[in-house]
Amino acid sequence: MLSSFQQKYDGFGTKIPPEKQKSVHLPGPDTVRQIIFPAVQKGYICKMKTVLITGGNRGIGLELCRQFYEKKCTVIMGARNIEAGKAAALKIHPSVTVVHLDVTLPGTLIHSFKIIKEKFGRVDILVNNAGIGEQVAEIRPSLLRNARRLVEQRIPVAKKKNIKLISVLRNHGMIDSDKNASKTDIERAVSIMNTNCFGAWRVIQQFLPLIEKSPSGRIINVSSGMGKLDQLSGYLPGYSISKAALNALTIMFANELKSRNIAVNAVCPGWVKTDMGGLNAPETPQEGADTIVWLALSEHINSGRFYKDRQEIDW
Ligand SMILES: NC(=O)c1ccc[n+]([C@@H]2O[C@H](COP(=O)([O-])OP(=O)(O)OC[C@H]3O[C@@H](n4cnc5c(N)ncnc54)[C@H](OP(=O)(O)O)[C@@H]3O)[C@@H](O)[C@H]2O)c1
Image (cartoon, rainbow, N blue to C red; front, side, top):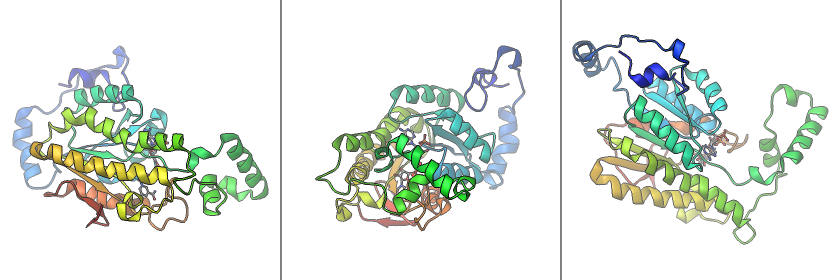
């Protein structure tokens, strides 16, 4: 029989109207023992890891959802805009579960936690991918709208191709960015820290009870080479310091959780062609997601390390 949660909620965690709720027979423990478990042992069925990815609706996060789904994992996509999340998840498969998760809003974390606890009972892999960059919020939306109108009037093909204006402006050096620590807007830096570092911290705290239910829990923080201590040039200081702090958080949690068999690592995906990375980035989202998926699904991994291109790198 379906659990009471499965009778009441669909794959997106949305309540099903009472008249549409129905009982369906699921394989019982005997079926699991006789058919499913031997198939898992023979490698016909993957061990069905349950993966939660924050910021999963676009960019590297969406590609992570796709790659984990292709590896036969149970994928839970966190999205701060639930509609954007549902639309993105359907591009992969209807079985991808979407939860409303804004890493800056604890209420959404508590709500998602309840849904995931009731539906899946545990989280094997948490990928803290949600992040914001330095420049985008500095452009007033009205300025962006006017710029888009101008570009589309003069270059009609821009509309058809749905060109990402922010990336174009940035790549031509037309967006003012706070390029050094002495000039940066501290409030903006606080906001970046709140998402990129404290956001990941909140998510780990909230979901730890479910990760502890996994026989070998994994937490992967999506960091950046910009947070490497030996490369802190002062360029994009708010973003850089948020990733340096995320790296420090990775080490702290790795030490704290080692005895509980939970590995915590950070990964730099490289410079990736996404809304954040811009059009000039050399790597595809597939390449950017690769090391994260490889690390998350490797049999034996270290904890408290920083990886890029499947290699360990210095902090
Ligand atoms: N692209 C690169 O070159 C690069 C390089 C190094 C590291 N990274 C890191 O890789 C990660 C993914 O980057 P990306 O390039 O894929 O960026 P992206 O395309 O801009 O996507 C960012 C994702 O994070 C989500 N997000 C932002 N703030 C959030 C919040 N408060 N709560 C929940 N979700 C939030 C966004 O949701 P919305 O759609 O709702 O905005 C979006 O899904 C980030 O941590 C980034 O720092 C990227």
